[in-house]
Amino acid sequence: MSDESLRFPVDITAASAAAQTQAITQNQIAVSVLRKSLDISAQQGADLAKMVAQAGNVGQRVDLYA
Image 1 (spheres, one colour):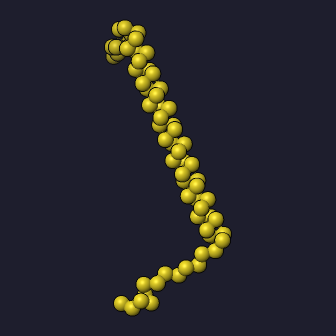
Image 2: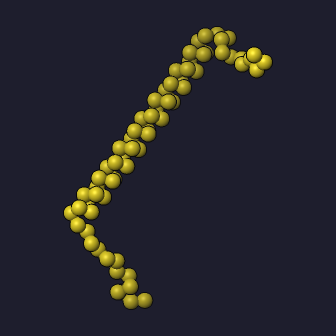
Image 3: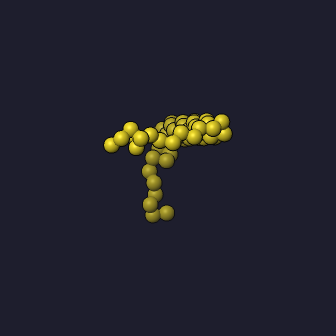
């Protein structure tokens, strides 16, 4: 295998670099939003579990025949 076959075309322009940076930034923002959404859901679940625990027997059993 020659060195020529290992080379990749490198056509980096200002526009392609900017597009790549923008795509990375958008991906990072999307991940941050999803993490925040997951954190909120987890907190809401914990709050609901706490409310059920404080309510005594309310919500402890599910009536499957109703």
